[in-house]
Length: 527
Image (cartoon, rainbow, N blue to C red; front, side, top):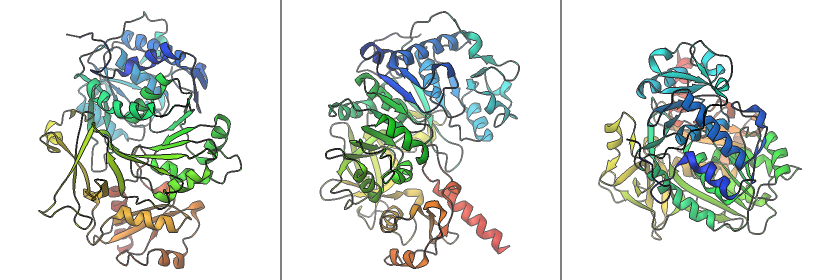
């Protein structure tokens, strides 16, 4: 039975976020750097009220296409802000959107569709003709819903369902599945992470409290993956505040510079690796970062030199850089902020403190040793924002549970002040290396010509530094040796263009895949 309950402290209902925000700030502007495939006629400048209307209209069309409460709706289409619209529309009528990254290959998507047990599939002609060309969609899905007008026979086009009867929103019980996202899939087929309205509210609360500290109505610019839960949490916070929003799809510095020079954002959020790329904007003649008061990263720790350079580009009084550590399964867990004065001296491995009253962190010994920098322990967390399952993989999820505690997969320690230090992912630990991430922080701070540095295990488990330079300039061997003199265990560096580094949807380098590629290249040369 579908339960209709009011939104509030029991849960965060994504399908209602735009409508509830529009009731408070209908004319707040949303700027896009691209046209929506779903509604190209909407243009690149819309209001919150227009967004709410688009979500409601799309929900009506999805109902007309046969989508019903508690149905699974797999979303796999080209990267575009309309992914947010489509997901909210599905949630508005009580369905569960499952967001699949556009970067996933057809084989992986086929496996995930099979796991979802005949979901509705929302896709586009490009994906049908390319990645899904050989997928047995008739067997894998209940129906194919198309964003666009041309496609295969049997697909339902949303464009043909214009004018569908209006449907009232459906709010399911707060512990019913409300959203599925997926993990990076660095070790195989990604896991489908199940969020509920209650767990989404658990991760929404700390972000709402942080936003309440920002009194100014800053223009908020965001560049994160549209299939990541962070996009949905971010807009759930800023839309009700009436903050002007700028949604960035193309994060190339040469595209961001004129956009930011025009909209002058006061709050900027993106992935750590995108922040690294945006270091090019620091000295840009358009001064695109001059009005930024707040920078924020919520995916991984950010290298201190990057924070220092970006803060130096701001002309605002006492700009701040917020750094949060979190996971897809749990949301934000630990955080701290930096100023222009202390960012350069920061210990990049120190993530800060758990969020008071909302998240709890403990360090569990590995191999019976007391956790320390030399012998890091497993980081475990307890939070109301934790997801409830991996869909169709209950045992896999339960393996990471220790009672109410969730094992993050990272290793680290707690210092005498109670701050959490993250040293590595457990699967990335290399013998004779205290922290690959610490090495990367240190060397990147010494060599500004590097755009990326990743230390991964080689064929003999030796630490291999993989470097990318700005503009693909050759690495200076002498400067490299001087920069790594205190890390004699490092093998010779391997230089690759930034574009050749395998990445996740959130722009993190896939270390295991990178290590595999290096091993394959070594084997080819030895053959």
